[in-house]
Amino acid sequence: MTDYIAAYREYLAEEKQASANTLSSYIRDLTQFQSWLITNNAADLRKVKKDTINEYLLHMNHSGKSPATVTRSTASIKSFYNYMVQIGAVKTNPAKAVVAMKVERKYPEILTNREVELFLEQPKCVDEKGFRDHAMLELLYATGIRVSELIALDIGDLNLPAGFIRCSNSKKERIIPLYHGAVKALQDYIKGVRPQLIADTEETALFVNMNGERMSRQGFWKIIKHYQEKAGIQKDITPHTLRHSFAVHLLENGADLRAIQEMLGHADISSTQIYTHVIKNQLKDVYQKAHPRA
Image (cartoon, rainbow, N blue to C red):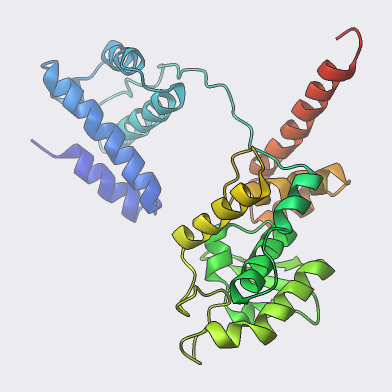
């Protein structure tokens, strides 16, 4: 029998140019679906009906899978059968009329202005690690860049006299301004500390670990958690928390949504609009707590 899932994987990778994460998620969802079909004596993917898919999703729900996981599996199965229709393996998509579970949207955790100040104050500029960590955190909040972009920065991506950084990925390049405090923190790190940390004078990485090699995601994650604990902030701070806080604080102070989209590097404005919902939710919470008749 044709291995339709393997063929679909190749289609996603080559024609759709799906990311490694997307590929992994879709194929894992489909493999689990196929395993369930085999267990229930319905192994032929071409003979699956709408009721079969609904039964599987109900099984996932009863097995304790989160609504988000069930919704993602629904999307994976729908996408797979769109492909099956396209190659002529089935006439219609049995998942087309399947209704995904309603998922309560979780809004990102945001730090208050005071919490940001407290967090950024934690690295003490008394040694190499303190100067480096201070520069990294200031840069992250100044620009809202992703952690992957932060650790990928090279020394040549900075233009400190002009007060901006150049952030590039495979699709596009963007220029993001820096506030004075971030420029100062970077200058101190680059002039006084980085030359002592780098193991090789040819090293291009802006931020390096204590062995002089490019900082890793895992290394930066540990830094974030260390300073969260030190600051005593009860919220769960992740490397993305400063990115979310950057966007919300700009919006609260009147920044244009399109400008924030450009700085964040969002391909779609809808990804940026989530921050307007965060602000509305915050206002609602304030109202509920403060209004005497609420």
